[in-house]
Length: 621
Image (cartoon, rainbow, N blue to C red; front, top):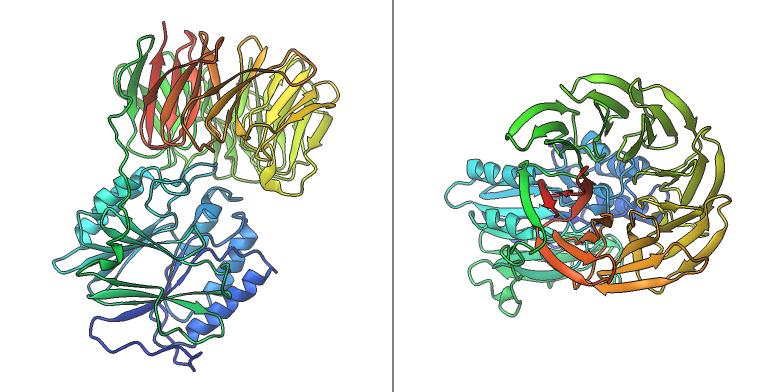
């Protein structure tokens, strides 16, 4: 929460005096502090707070994201304990380590600081900051659709003649790897107003970027190569902005890292502006398919959808679960769950199942959205489930995996002992249930009893290398997965015996299986599609297709229908590949953000959702 506490007067740690000027201000920027309880960074943050409290010239502190290492509640609480000691106002936004990996589905940020965005006026400068994602899965950063609208609406109401804007976002407003896929949408808003600069972290180093004529300043991390631990000091007035590297225990240097003259912007003269994406590229309809935008929700989406006839069941970043008749353009019902939904709504036999970020699995009446049943969970439910017949198989957010009667919500069995968050949906076939979790393990259970048959891990300690967001391929007596350790691994389904592991391609989390179960497909981090046989005891490559998408890290699955394979990029490009030959047939530009997931209707047509809040249908002959 934004704290307005008077600055205490104390002794100075060798900090230079800000030159007197009516419009001058000085503030500190803490970025990428990456605190876990008990590590050195916690001590360095404490010392940073002590120094700021001892410097009466610093008027406020901006914390530009990546407060934690894994988004754990204990980490965020440790940061809050230190920031609460500040004797000046402090303004906090999350970074990707809070939004991508989060024990609380992003709610701890709201609990500790009141919001994931801020705005305030200081003289004739308006400071405004917001989250830049990504949200509960790997992907490029992305500003939520509602936050872009809030940005425009807020600045329109606050900016007066002579005012300037300072915009803060953890990830920089750039399109390259490590940047933001909808940066141009944000910059279009900022350029409507007199935006003096944008402030960022994420790259752990000082950098200056030309963001369509706006100075984009990337700040140091708490621990940065080539210098001691520390933070940044910014001197700002109507004429210029200066950034200083403040090393803990050392005097502020006389020379700034950056000195930006607002009148000339001479600091940008040798910096190439960011290249804007072309929204009209690859918009021609394919010869053998129709790609149709069926809905733009106006808010972001972080999960897939289900379809029953003409009714779409989906959820959005506002916390709304909706039933929408897209043929007639009519909203049937909307149910507010209170905060962003990350779990894909599933439809089956008149019931819509969805995981709630407020610790529950809900069964809703498909006709009106009213609650039929609810199962309390120990953690936010950000994961997907799977309906098979009249049963639901689904992780309970963290800890327990459940088999549930779809109509009644009665729990048939509960498997406990999972020590991490669930995310991807399970695979169910041949009397077995297979799923991964963010605790390093892949699990195989008996479908009838829930008894553990076997579990596996890759032998590495890092939980971020877990098979937590990969949908296992389960066919015959074989289980195949990919994971962030960049291996594809095959096991026997009966005993979990490892058959082979392959890392000649950069696998990550995106994969699928052919309808007949004979082939698994995997999207690599180089943008290739790999087809591997499931019918041989050893690894056998059927074919490889270079789609041309380049660097890729999103976990959206690969899916085959009617002899065509579909996969998508981090920037909203949909690719269609021939399932027999591996030849790229076509690509279509659906937007500027990653695809979440797909749904196949009873006719084999494809539906997909994008983070930017769009739903497309691909009709195939």
